[in-house]
Amino acid sequence: MEAGAELITISRDTKFVHLAWQREEKMLEKVKYTMGSDPTGCVSRLFGVYDEQTGLDLRGTFIISPEGKLMNSEMNFYNLGRNIDELLRKVKANIYLGAHGDEACPVKWQDEGDKTLKPSAAMVGRVSEEYK
Amino acid sequence: MSENCCGIKVGAAVPDFKLETYEPSKGDFGEVALSGLIADKKWTVLFFYPADFTFV
Image (cartoon, rainbow over all chains, first blue to last red; front, side):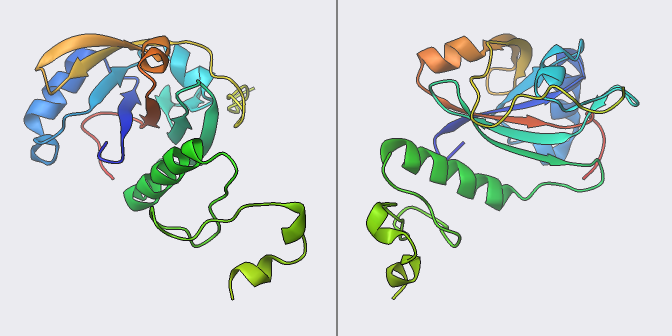
């Protein structure tokens, strides 16, 4: 990902179907990311996206830190696509916060360079001061 | 029970897993493991979706 993370898409399709789909679908022409295959549903069950009723995965997105910790999770039903701008925002925020352990990204944080908060005892009940 | 129980909780350590892959950048099949990504100090985004050749 341009934000600096490794993107892996995953479905229950085999790697052969991924190859055929990427080759066929013009919208996927420029794809460079890894297309993961989970036909047994093992990884899908691990992340709680596996739908026993259909045998397919729900639209789940998970961000994992370089230390192997799950930092974010989002899950949508089949009919609602995810917002890629929001995903990029969260990835950038996570990468920034990984390097600045004493800071937090407030509600309107969009991109590197935006204002962050340094939570402390002095800020308790005084967060409005940060936005003056 | 047909609910999605037992997903990993945010804040928890993710157990190692391995997947077979197709790599469009190489035009070939491959394999990816979380332990490898951690060894390379990468942030990882997993993007699950229902099925190839569908919409949305």
